Image (tube, rainbow, N blue to C red):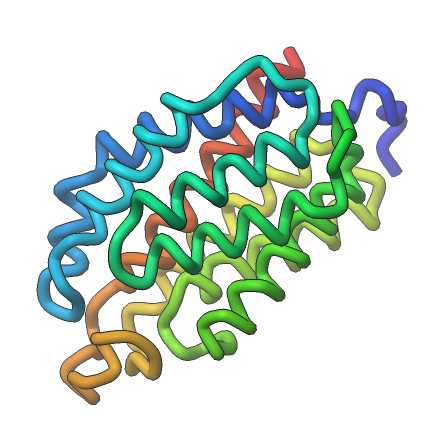
Length: 219
């Protein structure tokens, strides 16, 4: 068991805002790569859409200390600014992830588990998807499971989120041999095999950005 106290383990609203900034930075950096992944199995717009959406998110960030309000604002921005399926799905993730935390200025490690699980439940319902269908869930669900296991072991938020990011990366890579069952890629049938899912890839990048932001603000 970790001897980290709850106060030391808490994730502040500032860390959440830094997460969103880091997400925007890495999505801008990987814009062309995400579009390259999307070209053979999608509309070749995932990189541009995610970059545009998170640039808009950063532009609307304030110094609010209400984590729930911050995440709701992210959701509304993504739903209105991101095209295709990504906007509604990511918007739903952030909207449902933030609902339990209205008025809260910081999150404990267990709150992070709730944030992931609620966000994923929203994506499942909105996208009518399950793991193994070659979607963003294939990165998000392993991340949530690794996070929950680490928190149950008493790990700090930093340690638990590092485990989550590593699991998300493995989940992302695991989409390569899958046949897509949702979205435009599903129309390709077996031709969707041997391509890494762009949504799982952007999910990994966002989860890694969260791990990096919490590690940085915990120093």
